[in-house]
Image (cartoon, rainbow over all chains, first blue to last red; front, side, top):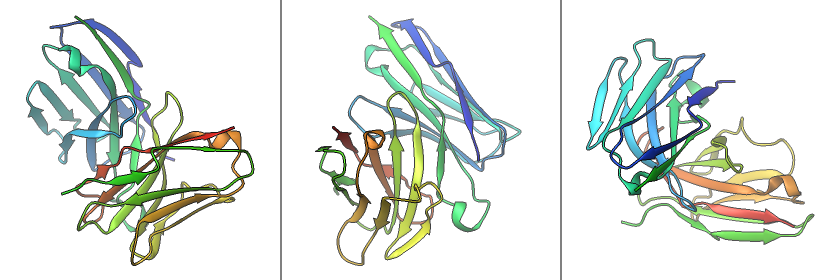
Length: 115
Length: 113
C-alpha cells in the first residue's frame, strides 16, 4: 500500500525560531494536505496543495507540493507557543474508482515550542 | 453550522463486549470516512461510505468490524467482541463530494479493559 515518510519525528525549538518538516512517498499523490492535531482533538486542515510545484502560504505557514508529486514540505516561521501540537502530512489520490477520497497520513511531527 | 459530531467522546468496554461509535456528518455532507489512530501514530483509513453504500472498506479488519451510513441518522462504526488491541482513537470525517472539503470530528477514544 501507499506509505508516507514524515520527518522529523519530533522537534524542540525556541519561540521565534522557524520550523521545517517534510514528507516523502514512494508513489504519486494528486493532492497534499497538512494538518495539525491538538491533544484530544481531531486533525484540523492547515494547507491544501493541488498542483505539482505549487507553493501556498497561510499566515506564518508555507507549504509546497513537490514537482515529482512524491513529496511536500511545511514551514512555520517565527514560531509561537500555540504552534505546539502534532503536524501530519496526508496524501490523496484520484487514481479512480474507490481509492478517491481516501487519505494516507504520515506518522506525524511532534512540535514543542519553548517560550 | 455544526461540524462533524462524534459520540461518545470516550468509551470504555470490557473484552468481548460490543462498541458502537456514532458520527453525524456536517450538514450537506453525504460522504463519510472512518480512520483509526493508535498512540503516537498517524491516522489509518478504515472505510469510506456514501449514504447507504460502502464505497471502500479496504482498511477495515475482515472480522468483528462493520460500518453503516443509513439514509436517516448518523454513520455507525461497530466493533464486536472487542479486544485490547482495538483500543485507539477513532475519527470520522465528512465531505460534500468525493474527497473535497474534508472535515474531521473530535474522535471517540475507545479503551478496552
